[in-house]
Length: 158
Image 1 (cartoon, rainbow, N blue to C red):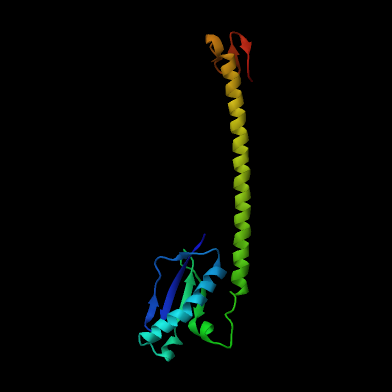
Image 2 (tube, rainbow, N blue to C red; image 1 turned 90 degrees about the horizontal axis):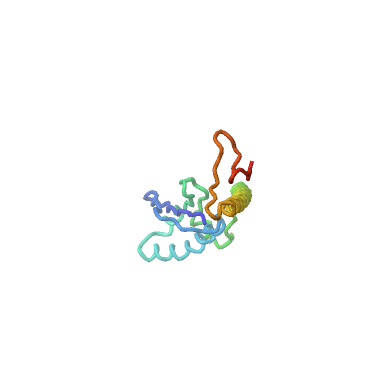
């Protein structure tokens, strides 16, 4: 799950979130911020922050690389006349593109894994045949500078 970082912009500057929180996607991170802002506002007011100052507070949501994905001003959530808006369409398209890319990569890795299992299975079968020919102390040897294997004069593999 991707990790999102919630930096808090205040009139005094930016408070960096050094830990981050994993969320299924940017939408989930955004909704969590929207749920957090009212409680945080009430706490800030209890500790003496003036309502006018709260107008300049915002969360900045960033990804693990530090790229700013979204800014959520407190006024966006606290304004009773408006509902919180969804992430910008460009970010939504970017997220969908990343999901599709991830799905393609997963499919490619699964194909490679299947091919490796098939090769491993063939290798096991060949080793079993080789062991069966080597039973009873009959040595299996390789003729120098060829790819032909012999067991007491009989060609086994090419």
